[in-house]
Image (tube, rainbow, N blue to C red; front, side):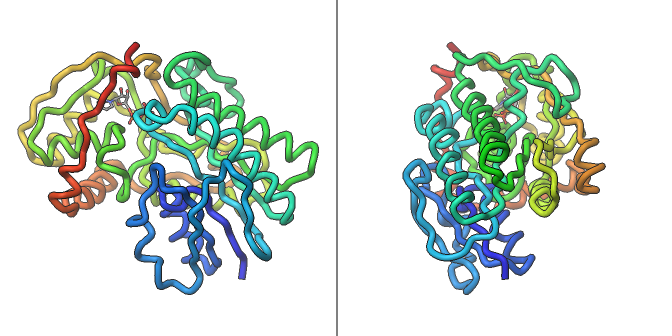
Length: 327
Ligand code: UDP
């Protein structure tokens, strides 16, 4: 039985990866310090004999007993609101946390897959984004703490591959959505769905002409799994190329939720990328992967998840403070 360590296991993607690897017959050790993750995402695994959990901050030395075959390094705040609230932790987990995870992979002779992001392309000047595009990131802008942490993650991963011969994989994840996203994480899908459920107007930032391409979590996790098992060590985009403007997307949400919410406009956050769409030819060729779930179906499933949350959970949604975001 293969043994995998997943850092960030109590997060949105981490918890779905736990489910995936367990379903594939692996034994999984989940690790999280619960800053942005939640035990409720992995509560269903508590009685699974092939799953164990360690509460640990990966910025500190990581100790795991026994053999490890795979490490999936997914620990990091990942929404703009989170990394603005905890910018230093975001930089540290991308740098120190990744260094520790790579050191562990080297010590255990394990294969490591690290989670990078479309944010490394910044506000892209190439569209759609191919893996050989170097990106357009403002190092000192509000998003710089995340973007540069993830760019460093890629660099140190390649250095461990080249200089220590560590067996590495790098996935560049584009906007992903689905059940277990936090309703208050500030990202556009939970934001719009939460607003629809609470009967509030939908807040479109800017004029809504900026685009995103949303991938359902089940597709994303399948792509990551295939990359883990592949022998390809350069970065691979995993995302859904079905691009939509945020304004059109708000209208889709109004139709889906069958509410009569109005759209209100708020200022566009600083350095908010104007367009984003993955070129997934590499994933198609190397992994024989492409998304299967259309946005309508994925959104329907995600909305029923949010609607199933209790009133207490819905109330927890904080007022989003964008003050520092917009300066
Ligand atoms: N957005 C919006 N209203 C919201 C939240 C986000 O219009 O209430 C916009 C945001 O400005 C961005 C897009 O939706 O252009 C996606 O934002 P998100 O935070 O989900 O992720 P990003 O792709 O920017 O990292």
